[in-house]
Amino acid sequence: MLELNFDPFPILETERLVLRRITLEDAQSYFDLRSNADAMKHICKPLQTTIEESKTMIYKINEMIAFNDGIGWAVCLKTDNKMIGSVSFHRIEKEHHRAEIGYMLHPDYWKKGIVSEAVESIITYGFNTLNFHSIEAHIDPTNIGSEKVLQKFKFVKEAYFKENYFFDGQFLDTAVYSLLSNL
Image 1 (tube, rainbow, N blue to C red):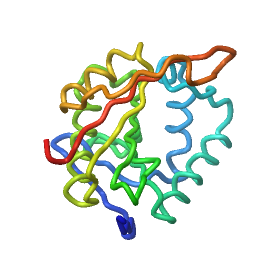
Image 2 (image 1 turned 45 degrees about the vertical axis):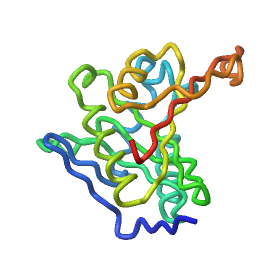
Image 3 (image 1 turned 180 degrees about the vertical axis):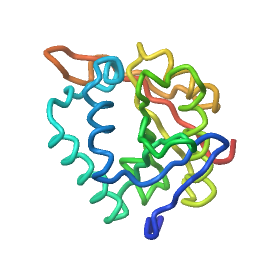
Image 4 (image 1 turned 60 degrees about the horizontal axis):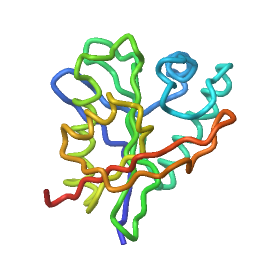
C-alpha cells in the first residue's frame, strides 16, 4: 500500500507555471473559475454562486491534503501568483497505487498549452515521487479539449459508460482514460 505524505506541500514548477497550494487568498480566483459557465461546461457540478462556496471547497481540498487522501494545486503563471486553474489527484486508491487526475483552467487562458504543461508536471510527480502505478481520468466524452490533453500524454480510453452520471436533470455519459507508469 502506498504511504503518502503531503507535508511539506510539494510546490511544482514548469517553464511557465508554479503549481502551489490553494489557500483562502485564492477564494475570489477559485470562485471566478467555478462560477464560469464555460469553465464548468464539462465538470458536471453546479456553478458556484457565492465566495463562501469557494471557501468551503478550499477547506475540503486542504482537508484532503491533510489526511493524505488527495492533493490539489493552484495553477499560476510564474509572472503572477494569481490562481488561473487547478490540477489534482483525487480518489487516490493507495492499495492499488492508482489515482484520478483532474484539471480545469479559466477560459481566459485556454489554448495556450497551460493545461498540458501542468498535467505533464503532475503526471511526472505522480509516477516518480508518489509511485503511482496508474493514473486515470474520467471525462465528459464531449470535452474534446480534455480528450486531446489525455491523448497527448498517451492515456488510453479504457471504458465508456452510457448514462452513468445524473446531473442537471439528465443522465450523462463518462469516458475513462488511463495511463500506466511503465509506458
